[in-house]
Amino acid sequence: MWLGLWLAVFGLGVGIMVGLNIPLVLPQAYAKYISVAALAAMDSVFGGIRAAMEDHFNNEIFVTGFFSNALLAAGLAFIGERLGIDLYLAAVVAFGVRLFQNLAIIRRHLLKK
Image (cartoon, rainbow, N blue to C red):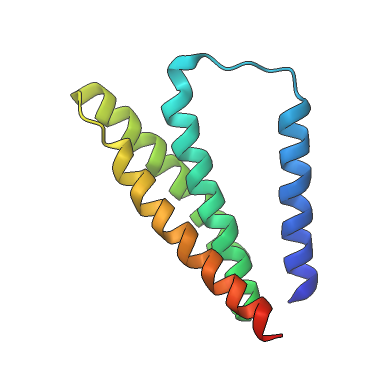
């Protein structure tokens, strides 16, 4: 369990470092899509860490959840923009709540040990 947890944290750290050092500037028009997709991806990572701590982590569930959540969030932002409705806020609220819940559960697991 702890090896998987540390690999996930290491992978997240490497991803952040690579992302910050790549000289790629994305257009401002994609800000909504990228932000909700990043939030959905972070929700999946924290969910994976939580699942690893609870000893029921599954690679297939993690990978499919990672990409389906990110695509759904970006799709909601795209559809909402076409309809003139801020549908991306639904994804921000849903993933934000889940992110804080998963973080609270992870914190409790770490404090119990």
